[in-house]
Length: 237
Image 1 (cartoon, rainbow, N blue to C red):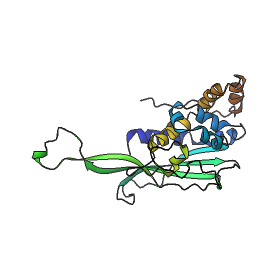
Image 2 (image 1 turned 60 degrees about the horizontal axis):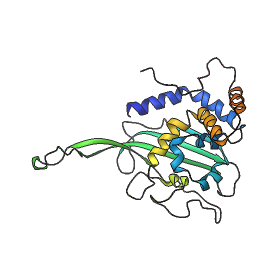
Image 3 (image 1 turned 30 degrees about the horizontal axis):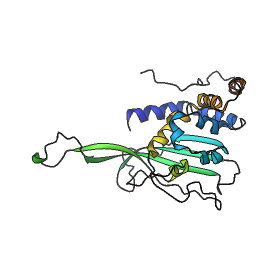
Image 4 (image 1 turned 45 degrees about the vertical axis):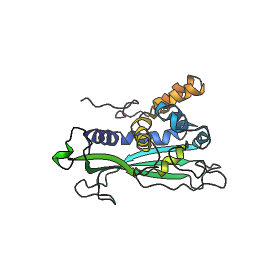
């Protein structure tokens, strides 16, 4: 596991009790997750106007770093070593688009040997050196759409502009959802841990009153001495 990935996992586990309490609280705030997503500039290019119609029904978004990986033995179907796994859970209220309102998608960080792309390697000296590389992969998640409500319009590839094609990301080969790994990292490392800040930013984009900021802070006053700070906890390193 990379040092960065390990720090993210450790931080997430430390904040797990807070995330659990927050998960219940924000369900009482109408439009919390749709607004937080709109407050994230890194996702702006991935979410279309049509996507917003469904995302407005998002009532829960949860990220979990899984502990079911034996780093000495776990490999994927292609024999690549699995370093870590992250699960994304989305829940929507009843809507005109999806048949199943609960969606899960799991990403795996894998390592594998590959030829060095160092241009300084002398081909005449023999085969290129092998280096260890990492990347994110995922088993595509099939979304079941209601009739005539498929936001992906049945098209898949770099030209599509629907966020919901992300659920079909695999991480292997051409024609995959462009930037799928970046979307996963943004959701797990920015949107999820900094949701409150993004919610406030998103309300500013929607033109809502600043009074809503105080309402959100009041909702988080759970009176626990060990409650983590509202902002993302950064390493002291």
